[in-house]
Amino acid sequence: MERGYHKEHLLVVDDEIEVAKVVTELLSSLGFNVDSENSGKKALQKIKNGKYTFLITDINMPEFNGIELIKNVREEKIDISIIAMTGYDKDYAYMDVINAGANDFISKPFKIDEIEAKISRILIEKRIRDELAKLSITDNLTGLFNQRHFHNKLKEEVNRANRQNHPLSLILLDLDNFKKYNDTYGHLAGDRILAQAGKIILSNIRENVDTAFRYGGDEFAIILVEADKEIVLNTSERIKKGFEKGDGVTASLGFATYQKEMDANDLIALADKDLYESKNKNNK
Image 1 (cartoon, helix red, strand yellow):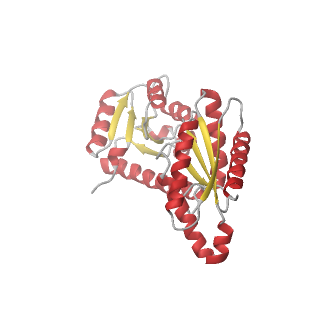
Image 2 (image 1 turned 90 degrees about the vertical axis):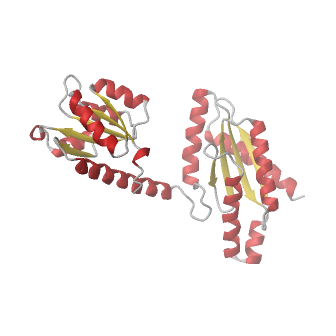
Image 3 (image 1 turned 30 degrees about the vertical axis):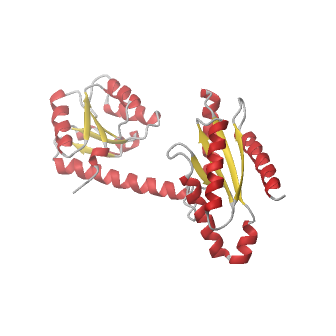
């Protein structure tokens, strides 16, 4: 049965090299990608530089023990699941390990099905948390992110553009004569148009690069990272044509490109001004 373990990258940390080797081989036999390290300090550096999804660390290690490693990883706010292991469980209470930031605790020696069960439970819980987090920032009707996430994401990208001097642009879009369409054909038909709008927008932006949001009732926003004016113009044109091919209403778009020392509100105001001018042209 496909368990998806190949997607997980584990780091096993134990100062006893032979123990680390045995644990690594056990986990590799289940299909996990596994590396090992015999030093807490070296492990911390590896975690900072790597893409590990799991840390399985011994508690009793010299110089920099497992508790210190776990606390440091959590202080770095690294998204990683942690299982602490020790052959001296009497020295540490379960809650000591959990309070340090571990997801679970296992006593050595352990059986392969025991550690697999713990990893599997953690993966299921993480998947549920991720799904709930996604639902909280997603607009159900269009499948796009919602307004709350838009403001958080835009602030994040503006701060990044300020720090790294990366190009950043924003498109604001709203549907032409949507109220009239809603009044004529009813709210269910209007909902279908909004759902269709989400699909049109997603199909005309760069996957895993640009991010689209339902900004208001019939208003939408698109954050384009690493995007100069030329990319924004091309994206806007594709979206406009997508709406023209649809079986509902057309759309007006406005955009703004980030300039040094702008904040998120400045970028929104500039794009909103361009959208207002665009709508006036379309209504003439």
